[in-house]
Amino acid sequence: MNQAAIHRWIKTDCGRAKYNTLAAKPGALAKLRLAWFVLIAAIRDAPLPNPDQPSS
Image (cartoon, rainbow, N blue to C red; front, side, top):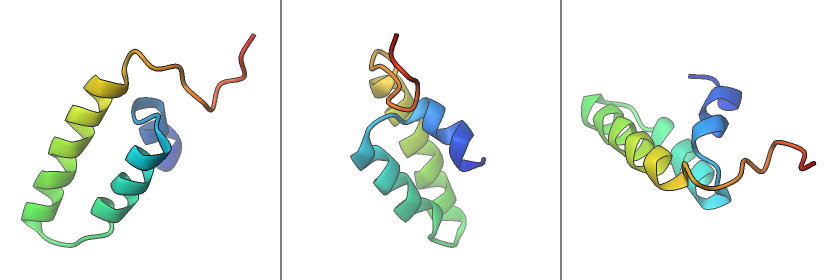
């Protein structure tokens, strides 16, 4: 998944930093943990406004 697409789902700076850390790790368990993180982060960040979108 590219950065722009993932930033649509993970909206906080700390969440994006954690995503980058987890995405850099090799291995099957690391990928499983990354998928779990993205799922939970997307649910938690869903009600937050997207900081990349200009506010009107």
